[in-house]
Length: 197
Image (cartoon, rainbow, N blue to C red):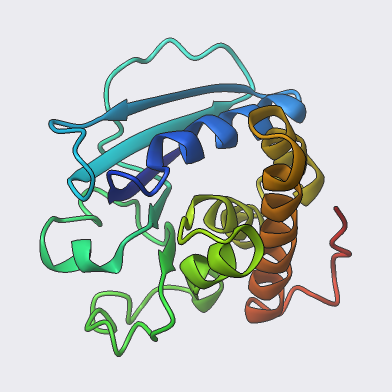
C-alpha cells in the first residue's frame, strides 16, 4: 500500500486533490481511498487530506500517520505544524513553492534524502497561468505523479475531466501537463519518459 498525506489550507482544494488522486489510481486499476481531516473548514485554516493506493481492497479507515509521500500545498505550514511527522525514510516530498529547500529552511532536514524524491514546484503560479485562479492542487497532483512514478499523466488528466468540465477542465489539464513535465525535467527523467495528455 502507498499512502499520501496532503497538507494545505481551506480554499486550496486539498480535499479535491485527494479525491482526484484516488480517481487517477482507479483509472489504472488500483484500489484507492481518499478522505479529509480538518477541524475548521474556514478559508485559510489548515486542512489535511489522505489518500491510500493499493492493489487489493483497503480496509483501513484511520488517518495516515506514516505516509510514503507528503504534498504541501502551502509552504507557510512548514512553520506552523509538523507536516513531515511520521514520513517514511526517503519518502517523497513535494512542496508548492518557487523557493529552494535551502531557502525554505529545511535543507538540514532533507540533507540525506535522495534528490529524486524531493521537489519544489510553483503550483500556484501554474494554476494562475492556466486556470486563472491561485489553486495549486491540480499541478501538485500531476507533479506527484511525475515525481513518484506511481501514476501516468493520462490518468491524472482523466481524473481532472471526471471532476471538472469545459474550460476549467482544459485549463487544469494544461496546468497538470506543464507541472508533470517540469517535475520530470527536475528529476532528470524527461529523456526516459514521454509525457502526453
